[in-house]
Amino acid sequence: MIPVIKAEAAESFTLSLTKLDDIATGISHFQYENMESSIKKKLCGCLVAILLTQPGLSASAQEPEQAQRILQPRRIEGSSFGTRKEEAILPQEKLQQQAPGFMMPGSTQMGLTYQVHVLGEVHKPGTYRVPASSRLSEALDKAGGIQGQGSRRRIALRRGGRERGIDYLSFELYGNLDANPYLLDNDVVRVPLQRNVVLIEGTIKRPGNYELRDEKNLEDLLKLAGGPTPGMGISAPIKVIRISDEGKEVVEVENNKVRREQFLLRDADTVVFPHILTANRKFDYNLASLPGDNELFYPSYDERIFVLGAVAKPGPYPFTPYYDIQQYLTLAGGTTRLAKVKKIQVLVPGGGSQPWTAETQINPGNTIFVPEKYMSAESVLALVLALTTTVLGITTTILTINNN
Image (tube, rainbow, N blue to C red; front, side, top):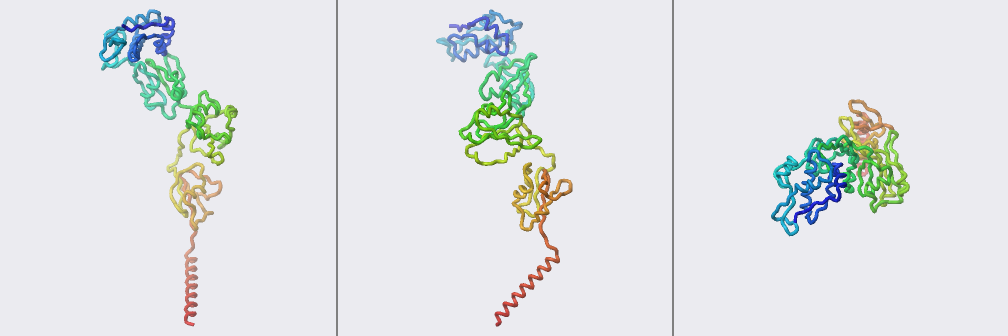
């Protein structure tokens, strides 16, 4: 029995062919009777190759029949089809006429391929040749993947003068195939820089940085991050840290659905959901960096702070923008007994110094010098003479007592 391909309706076939990016949808309208899945898959690939390479192809009701006539059965040892060992394939000589350059699976030659351009924030931007059934994810893999600052929410797919926005993250998180479309010849994939990035930490199933697209409030962000973990503390408020020119602001939001829906997010917000085990603890919420920002760069020859002089452990220490002199002295083990705390000096690169005050700002490359107390030579001599006289006096008294 030769497998039969039937079209449900010419209208459905016509509709699918008007949109080449939905060619797989057109193929799905065909019903395969008594056919194994492996044979069905190869047959679909051949049919796609024919339909896409027909010169002057017009969507008409006769096209399924034309494609069917090209298909011929052939006996294949080791395969099964019902009770007969045969498989529906496209003869190589006819396939070469219909799709020049296309070879059947298993051939040593290249199959039908498309040229696609992957640009923007990927590790290896360029032009690549991919198999005809490739999706967006495969082209991104060929380009080395998306860089850290690249957007997964606003990938642009340009085809025939039209551009389509793709939320690739919805495919990665939820398996949404609409966000991982099939590619066609000469498609252009552009990965832009990400924007509107927030950081969510704490009792969340998927903590980390997220680029906002349609999400507006805390409830949307919570769903995007996978929802809460069992340790979420409902009684403690959510902390939202915002950094601006005016400084750091820590906003407290009640941890209930109504308030989460009411609170609108801003770019570079850091959201911390409380844990029941730390609900009663206090934190400074000082951030080492902002969401979506680069690592801090200090335009200085040396980014370290040097603590020298009358301290327990003099030496260099990493610069921290939130530390003042007291914290750096603590890192150095504190001052010694001979330290002149009121005479601490801050030395700056290139020369110059300033006395330490409560308002003194410590910058990368600065040196904190703690002077030691010292005695003049005359004072040391007077102290030695006084001690010698005292010792001699005590010795004379002891000898006198013993003689008596």
